[in-house]
Image (cartoon, rainbow, N blue to C red; front, side):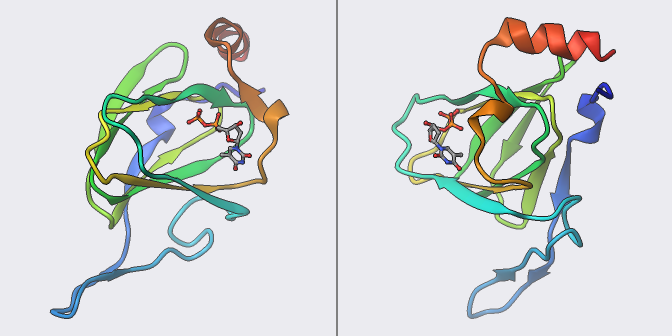
Length: 140
Ligand code: TYD
């Protein structure tokens, strides 16, 4: 396995068609984000103080957008950590495989949309931080 670095994870600015009637943003498969989209899911009605995530994926690429409101995404590649705040719907965070992530600090009414490179597959998850660390460091 190739070691993944947190430096691969980045904020991507999306096209924004500004209009007095309301703004429009679009995302085209692998044109605006570095993978093909196989799945979309979203988190909403998140109670104040909740945390989501706390896992990593072996192979999944994801792109996270705050469709409404704001929240923080803490990423950890097993060596380095970075915090991103998402609060605009025309920016998103690309998260490469083998990144431990924690989402927290959700504002009231926040909606977190995630585009993913594959279908849901529980065997792609690391849910135990120590197992993730061992795998991440083995690939170094
Ligand atoms: P999970 O990815 O563990 O979210 P979080 O880490 O934020 O709690 O998913 C929570 C539950 O939802 C888990 O039982 C799996 C299920 N799930 C699906 O069935 N399909 C999906 O696409 C996703 C993302 C989750």
